[in-house]
Image (cartoon, rainbow, N blue to C red):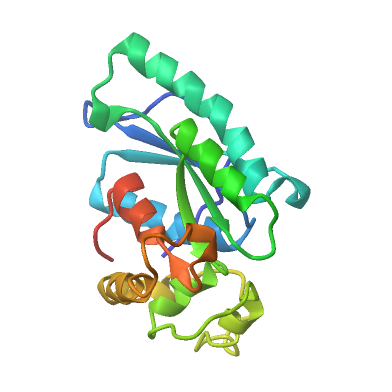
Length: 221
């Protein structure tokens, strides 16, 4: 499966067979892992003819501007602009653009603040604790124990870690055909945490499947 690199673009919604595509703008914490995963999803969207157009909104941002709060603060003005445009154009809810931030717990400061601001301004978040690698690992096995914000402990469990040149890059053969099981395992893993526990304290945790289904319109792969 070919992969295309995400580009900075806030362009207008495209057309697919005379129908308007819903545009999804994504701010990613990592420059490689989440982006390479999204590239695979974009290929599926194209192959299946889904009316969704995905843009990496911060593809050129330096690493110093990719902490959770940085992402949300960059996403908020875009979301406000898109809301105004959608209301002016009277777009139906299912066609309204979405803005997502994909970020991890890791050792980042002000994660709680990032969540509060995102919720206030209708920016959607896909969150993993300690990192996105939990979602990758769930494609292969259950995830047990706690990681105390140490992503390397998750990476060490990836079954293909010694078979690839760059463990930060997601390849299609690592995930395709495994979504149903990955989501089932994620839901079971997440259920061990009480609803009273704030998301940043849920270890391990991931809800990337919400982004896949609600954002990208993909329910299986």
